Image 1 (cartoon, one colour):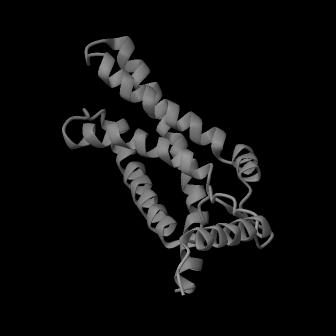
Image 2 (cartoon, helix red, strand yellow):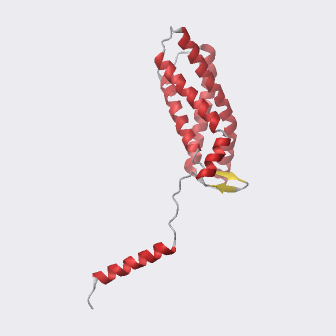
Image 3 (cartoon, rainbow, N blue to C red):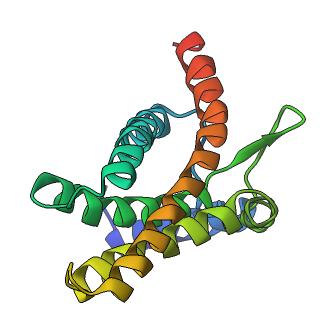
Length: 178
């Protein structure tokens, strides 16, 4: 018996076409499962960073401590992290009445009605603070006043603490499912 590769190749191609025609392609997964282990780790990191900022912020504001060295480094990196966090929140699925909502349009609508406006304002004020520190010298009185105003935007981050209640609940659920 002789092997005919042309017949075999056409048989394989036909089988693939039949399989492709009978089952529609799966849509791409463009959402993050809020109960997944990677999201749990990410949430724990963001909670830690939030607690760090909330403890450090009153000290910096009360005693007008210069942000140099480590503080300057953290002060520059945190706006980047929170900017990424806003993007991640817009693709993270959520639970509604016990059902996981994964439709990107519904996720975006849900976020726009929820914390997204507050998050965007806080992130914009964080970036304004970074720009102010880079632009104005300490002896420029107008720059110092503007810098204080942008630092006060971090007070809005306290609202994020309320949001972390949701993160803690997600962590508890994930740990129970282990």
